Length: 236
Image: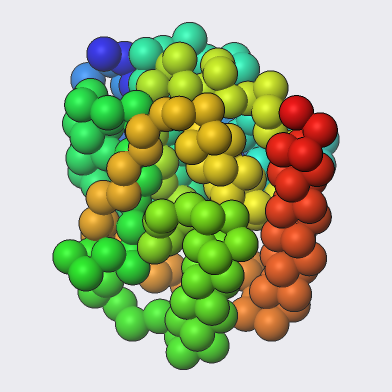
């Protein structure tokens, strides 16, 4: 099966070169493509990614106006025709071999997501306490409010079958960091089986996620997503 890996990136000049080198080296086969979804970059990210595209025909570059993480992933999913479609964060917190494990799991089900909160997950670097606390709180709220069975909806590594992507994309609205929750909720509502797989996840320096401000913003987005899905269920 061919695998397309979407990497959303907004001003990642400090990390994207290392990430692409690692993924290209670890996944050398022709059946893997790297779809770089650049979200209104104003730094050297396009030039760095362009250099990789010239070196390796498996690297494809798509530049967008400011759409948010979910927006650029959605648009790039539409440009993929691979049997398996995944996405991974540009910081290389998920090692390449871990994404291959998700792809292998997807061969038996409809999709697989990496989980940092699974008892068997391996996190070599300790996460900052504030981020750990807010992440745990958000995960619990998502499980209760959205009635999802997953311990970790926000881990930036997921792989789905082509037919799942084609089926759920028309039902998605979130274009920000709540894209993951929206995606998983839509897949579950439509009867697809997506499993959670323990992962190796290495916390990276340079994260733009703020424990306090982003938690408030994500909380507000979560409430909007919940209301939209409740209204949709009532009017269906």
